[in-house]
Length: 268
Image 1 (cartoon, rainbow, N blue to C red):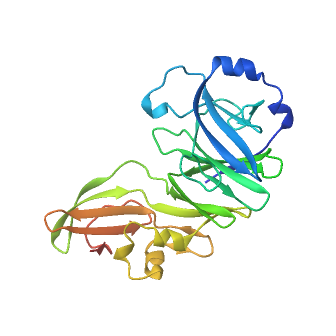
Image 2: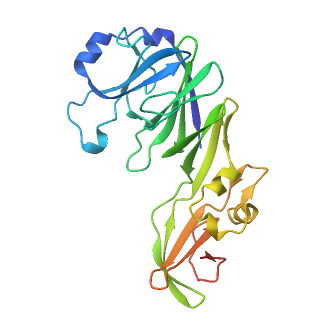
Image 3: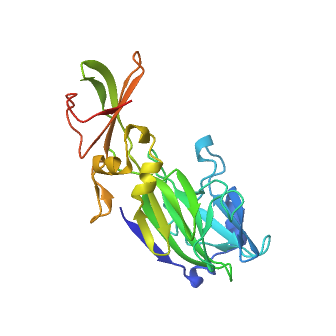
């Protein structure tokens, strides 16, 4: 997964005509964040006058107002205007309608999602200086995400291993027929000022089928966790269900395979 860092250019922020931009764009969403006692507004705007319901919160322009209702400044997030962004909506500790997390006493990360249809949106971060309320850097990632939780000096978030296509069918496990399909394998990661890293313990604690593993060690072994590479290798996940018998099983594999039922399924 690739991560792209952008330094904020003050010259870029000052080269646009705010009045002209507002005349040709429409507000899609906004949030208020608290930075070192200062109230900051962030606004998403789009050139499209009408949108589909699923597109209503996306925009190509992200503005911020160091002093609410005063002169706004255009953030370089999505500077090429080839992508649309939305707020990573939720109740964060520092923002009203979106997630904003303190990274230390001087820095705040405000979270955005970059449009990635038909797949899940990708995580982007805008780092602000808490003293000056000025943007410092942008981090755009290839991490698909839909959930985040604050921690001390950062946050954790759920992402997913890449998956190609959808596979489903039937398989006999212990002479019982199950309907199976592959599912996205959830991975929990952490971001602090030290960077991004996978958190194996959180990945186990928040795993939806955690109860099928006796211990965290058993889960990590099944998922192919490696301490040296700091990643999971068995991220092809099959879920098999027998509705009549109210049975469910999970299987983690390094790659897609023709299932025989003799694999090491873990069942309720």
